[in-house]
Length: 73
Image 1 (cartoon, one colour):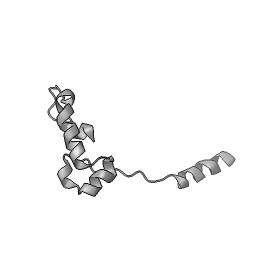
Image 2 (cartoon, rainbow, N blue to C red; image 1 turned 135 degrees about the vertical axis):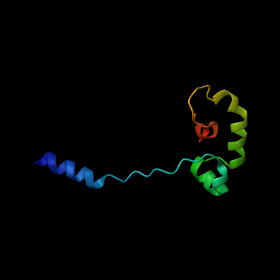
Image 3 (cartoon, rainbow, N blue to C red; image 1 turned 90 degrees about the vertical axis):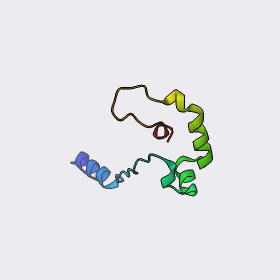
Image 4 (cartoon, helix red, strand yellow; image 1 turned 60 degrees about the vertical axis):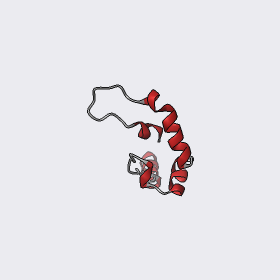
């Protein structure tokens, strides 16, 4: 009986998970939203992308590989 009460209590205290929509590029966000979400300013995100894009580009035969900018996010 006590175990059932603990399980029910834990279920009530659990927070709803929030999933944000996946972004393809930074153009959909304002500058302060980019910094709040990724903790880097937009210009540094783009510079980082330019520096490591060749190293993280997927070499695959899949129809929709994960975009490099998404990997950085």
